[in-house]
Image (cartoon, rainbow, N blue to C red; front, top):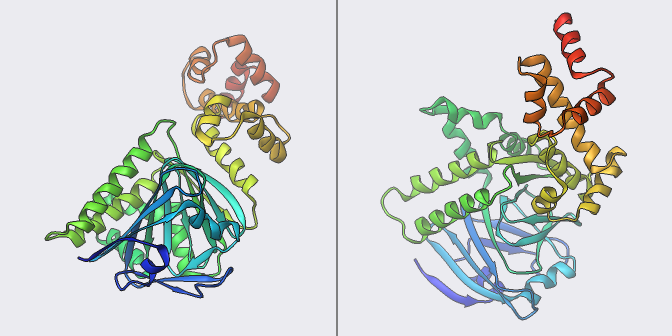
Length: 358
């Protein structure tokens, strides 16, 4: 395996070890990237926010490795000139540290550590680095990702077939059937801790090591690691996944993220917790929710909470006090008042009515 060190980006892409070939390289609108290998992994590290700070980039594939550097001002130049690229492969963009802005078809989306997006083929996009960050890019050719999904057909374990029920699988297969679909897939961590980012970081390190130091069985190891990666992203225990059609704007994406987090927490996620998860101020999040629902952030979250309370009342034998405690109400009277305001009856009457009707 040959390695070229500290090449600039254009020389790297033009080198014989590059697995990416660029068409219309001088264009400010339609740069097209063709990947001539089944799979490619690119790891980029930005060491600061100044224009002369460096972005270190390593691109790896089967028996190909290219290492190069460029300044942040040069990396972001194409972004400010509105010169995105598109390609003939599926690309996962995973933020391992820090945060980046992803511009997709002219719209900006913020991604923070642990979050991820899947860019479909022929979708114009460009990444913008504003501060220290580490980003992993995984490119999969249509044939290769089809091969990965095909493994589940002859799986030894029934749980492996659950990938066919995932939003990820349906998104990719839809793109394979209809290349003109204008959408990308958005992943945000289901947990408020750093475990998703750490898990993805660990997977990335293992992939890099396997590609740099292959041994007997390395081809199977890479396929297994990629299957584990797809499975991890597809699990609702780890990620909330949303398909974002490009007739929707970035405000809708943020609203969808808020909704997913409220769904997962039964509406009991505080403004501070949302700020930490989504990296926006509480006031801004409140305005986004109001734009789509005419409700404030607290009231919108409470709709999910009271809906879950109604479900517990009709589907369990738990006491009303236990249900209130489970939903993090410290004042039973407050819970009663909110429930009656929404449903017109007390929790006790609601349970009796629905049990009698049942």
